[in-house]
Image (cartoon, rainbow, N blue to C red; front, side):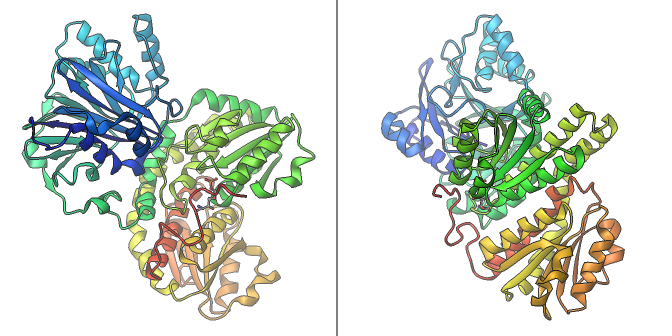
Amino acid sequence: MCGIIGITSLPNNLREPIGKVVRRCLERLEYRGYDSVGIAVIKGNSIEVRKGKGKIVEVNARLNFDEVSGTTAIGHTRWATHGKPSDENAHPHTDCTGSVAVVHNGIISNFLELKEELIRKGHVFKSETDTEVVAHLIEEYLRLGYKPFDAFKAALSRLKGAYAFVVAIAQEPNRLYFARNTSPLVIGIGNGANFVASDIPAFLEFTNMVIVLRDGEYGYIEPGKVYIEKDGVPVNVEERIRLISWTPEMASKEGYPHFMLKEIHEQPFAISSTLAGINEREFDNVVNLLLNSRRVLIIGAGTSYHAGLIGDYLLTTMLGLDIHAVISSEYKKYVNTINEDDAVIAISQSGETIDTLVAVRAFKERGAKVVAVSNVIDSAIPRESNYVLYTRAGPEIGVAATKTFTTQLVILTILTLRAGIAMGRLDQGEYRNLMDSLNKAPGLLQNVIARTEGRVKALSEYMKSRNNAYYLGRGIGVPLSMEGALKLKEIAYIHAEAYPAGESKHGPIALVEEGYPVVFSILDDDNVDALLGNVMEMKARDAYTIGFVPEKYVGKFRELLSVTFELPNIDYRIAPIIYIVPMQLLAYYTAVARGYDPDKPRNLAKTVTVE
Ligand code: AGP
């Protein structure tokens, strides 16, 4: 997820150099990505590009965007997906002649084959990005005599994947082209200037008249004109204009009161992006590694460790592999026995957590091969690993991990399924069924959020006055419960403890008294009847029992539970991706009900870089 902006203005309309305006707009998009930045301004019949690695304030100090004048410009702040953060890979990207410049947010899934085709035609590429392909494709059609808009449309018709583009073509100094397919893009209609951006906050200081573009729409802006088309048919622009009542500050959260709530709601998109951004070759390499390893350790901290526990459960129960999930800071237990026959899966959304990095280095030193599962391109752990499987959740700003957890589960589930096929432990039918469920997860999750959010919010009014809680599950429901409990702990400061439900009568139930909150994760597996007994145990002690239950078992549990949340019937191996979300919401609303800031919980940092 990156931030892109385009501005076309009448001369002297902006009252300051357009480079400075673009820089300010990008700053409001920086939460979307901040590893490199760049601008491009049309100057006569050429384009001036200034770009580099680093945060906006650093690069602007180096390259002085603020002095660049002009009337038509584009800009980009990057969250790297293809190609590490570098000056070359920073956007905008241009064609061979320098007269076409592109900024992009998303992933072009067929960029490799297009790049090979263009190289055969003599194009010279300067970056590792998927984006640069677009500039050369447009150049190719211009070279064939197409008019600029037709060249843009022809290039667009060749692309697959998720994208939002803004394109400047020097021979049309007052126009910018745009296109949207999945990645967000909005138009801002100003007075003597028009804007196109990834998000409204970018241009909110200039206008609150916006058009939210829809998938498959493309077109162009000029200082006094907005033209939108879909499938060759013009769109009625007037009808699409909306007035936005947001403050710039608010908008950076896209209207959400907190980044955490926004990121919870972004999970359907994050999961689809992760599914769309699978690197086939790297997955094959990792499956091969797992199949040829004596033992596999899965390491991580906090939420990433919980994802590792779920990966452990899947790989052990489905494939019978020798898997050990290990809290990164406890790696020493294995360090003397690990060797070149072992593999390590290191999970870290930030890719910078020192506990995990140290463990990676210690295991690598003894010959183990390391696979990183991370959300930040080219961060330390991926950089030091032999293989990398990236989640595509986009920048996660809220300290509590939400969308990075569910996308980690997507990666670990796909890995298990592919290894299962490769080992012959999973037949094609079961593979397809589980992949089907996975591909349905974004839609199902959208529905679950809509159906449960209000009731979870109501439940937080009860939880806000509690200082303790238990989260119980069995099987794959145990790590799921551990993640639910961690969310409540880290942002609502309630001492929530998770443990296997079968353990209650061996001690923990001693704490339970009237009204004591006990949250049950009930999944569609062979633990349902045992969990029924555990719910009864707690009910007998007047606990306040809360159940997340598959629809088909609601009849069995509703009478016994104080609160029942009906969730979709879905294979228990996929269910954690969906069932964790109402628990994230419970933690969020309980934190807010207790008057805390869910985005900046006390004593915590988004990335822990100290041991
Ligand atoms: C989770 O909500 C916390 N932010 C924390 O436990 C986090 O998961 C842990 O610090 C690991 O971070 P990483 O995934 O970036 O390595």
